[in-house]
Image (tube, rainbow, N blue to C red; front, side):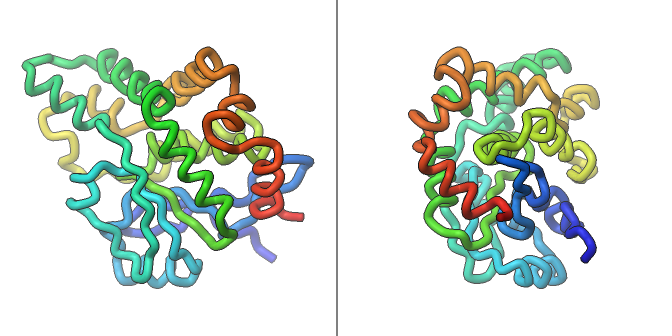
Length: 247
């Protein structure tokens, strides 16, 4: 039997992909067609909707801010959308800097992205805890996403994969796949210089590392963060493994 494809090659959500196949605890691989990560689901074509319908996805966790959701609401029919709002977004922070007259360099943008990732841990841990509650509540297929499916979604995917025993090297490889898959609209970024735009619309290893440095230094490491902050202790991790890893 051929291996399922990781990227679903959708037209309206180019960063829509399956987390299946990665090796987790005790050599058990993540099941295919159970967990998906994506950019927003507001521009899916009729063909895309048919593909997603075939996956049986009705559970959606959306990390976008309120205005992001209004601008591109999820169009999956019969979707149960859980809003796990993370704000301010990096675009909001960037806009504030530009409105204040700041002239940003690529290095400034890297620092802004790193702080955004640190704040995922500092200020938005309850949203990621709610995602895990959804994962534990049912074994039905689920997709989680933000706007581009790279930052909020990238950190969420890393937490899920690590909780299931996937190696950090593979987790980083999955994170960096965004740079291969995500297609940016030609006029996105407006007045930004090409160098700043490239930082904003791509992912870098040091972005994700910034978040996990906070996990390590402020929360006692990944195991403690999962158990005490995300509600994913040994019993919950065993349950996740039973649901999402192949037997």
